[in-house]
Image 1 (tube, rainbow, N blue to C red):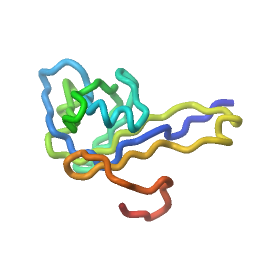
Image 2 (cartoon, rainbow, N blue to C red):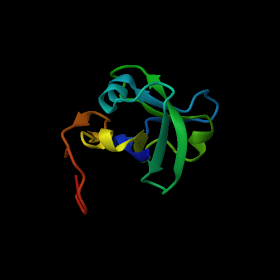
Image 3 (cartoon, rainbow, N blue to C red):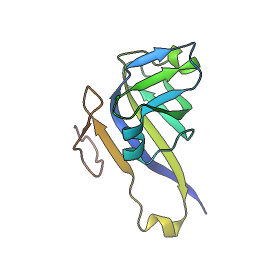
Image 4 (cartoon, rainbow, N blue to C red):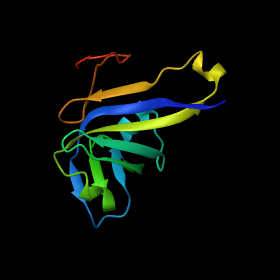
Amino acid sequence: MLRTFLRSKIHSATVTEANVEYMGSLSIDEDLLELAGLREYEQVQIANVTNGERLVTYAIKAPRGSRTIGANGAAAHLVREGDKIIIFCYAQYDNEDLTHYHPRLVFVNENNDPIPGPVKEEHAQIL
């Protein structure tokens, strides 16, 4: 049996641009993609901490080192420049996979620079 678990996340990212006219979906700095173990065109879920919206889309590469988090196309109606978001990616695992399972957690500051964070989330934990 396969079960769906969090595979990785980028926590508290700041949206640096939003463009309804742009092709694509969620632009993510290539450094942050790699830290989270995400690949271009991979499905991601966005939780907008600023307004409570949630949506499913896919990731595209933004220039390495730019710290860009960009909402593009239809996503830009729900995610605006300056919003704080959490980017999630899920995967399916079998029981054997789960013996070594742990999600990749990436934490960023207000400039989307990676910062140290907990290796495991716990109830009522604040960064």
